[in-house]
Amino acid sequence: MSVREYPDLETFIGDVRKHNPGQPEFVQAVQEVAEDIFDFIADKPQYHEYQILRRICEPDRVISFRVCWEDDQGQIRVQRGWRVQNNNSIGPYKGGIRFHPTVTESVLKFLAFEQTFKNALTGLPMGGGKGGANFNPKGKSDHEVMRFCQSYMTELYRHVGADVDVPAGDIGVGAREIGYMFGQYKRITNQFTGVLTGKGLEYGGSLIRPEATGYGAVYFLQNMLATRGTDLSGMNAVISGSGNVATFAAEKVTQLGGKVLTFSDSQGFVHDPDGIDQDKIDWVKEHKTKRRGRIADYVQEFKNATYHEGKRPWSVPCDVALPCATQNELDGDDARTLIANGCIGVSEGANMPTTLEGVHVFKDARILYAPGKAANAGGVAVSGLEMSQNSQRRSWKEPELQKLLLDIMQGIHESCLQYGQQSDDYVDYVRGANIAGFKKVADAMLAYGVV
Image (tube, rainbow, N blue to C red; front, side):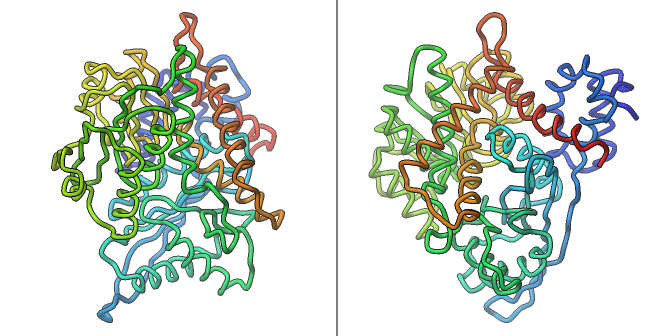
């Protein structure tokens, strides 16, 4: 069926839903992009003739496999692993690996779909992919995590490679997990190549990779604020999450003169009216990564803070918000609460953390709102730079990488302005990011013909 034959967006989304039953996250991601792309391609027959939108919404391949491993009690455990290779029109598949009980094929397909446009926005030659397993590393010993990672890579290695598909870390996959998987890949293939990013500095990793996603989201927020003639100095910021992205976003907000009020995890959030300064951020990093503790413990260390069990931080009045935890953590009611409490800017550090209703609320209110595919692209941008360093068998100094990250985030912002600028000076960053990312991938697909 030609895209031209769809009478409206609803019919197109209905067709996507029909072909992807039981995959709400993936359908949501497609709809969020299609709402802008449908009108953009209306008068462009080349995209219709080659059914570009329909083809982009169908992954190149979805690989599913069994992962067997042995726990410390000698019990055999079985998980399911995946790798979704969505689109490699502009470069090797690139995207993280997520280990979490909530991982499903739908979640990974949405992440790979988003990754395709995010990677295109960076300007680097990277396609879109994502992988993971419904394995929970929390509560597992180092040896259990090692055995699982080795078993996962034993299945995955035949589908990845430095010029084919380059995974990275994501939720549940940090430096420890990357190290175990890289070691197993090297062991099986007898090759030392840049097949994974997020590696340790000792074996091919890049400086500033841990900081890049959080820093990038704040740089993008600064770029948005600059269009209104202001910056982060003196602003109150609400941040969700307490992992790498959240803590480094908080660090950069603090460096730029803002005041961070919250962190959260899956069980609740902490509100510190005194502000979460660098010493407190360092405590959270230590507590969450090395001790693997809960954010609730923060209030035992810092007595003026309060803990709110089972709740999210969006009720705390703020000037700006950075959702840095996980998908669909901010819904329509949360969006309305943020706006009512004076929030003027939202920069997404996570992938699709705002529901479709929440996106519409932010756009209707015409606040500064940056979707994850633009705002959190800093992480994969530095991963792309790590790939370049691996290919050249060299490493770049931190000042070079910091400058490149700043330039890439500025470039993404300019791309969003190009396609998102409205006649009344309002910038629809969602539309801008969707069209800019789509156009680069779509034009490459046109160049290849039907493949």
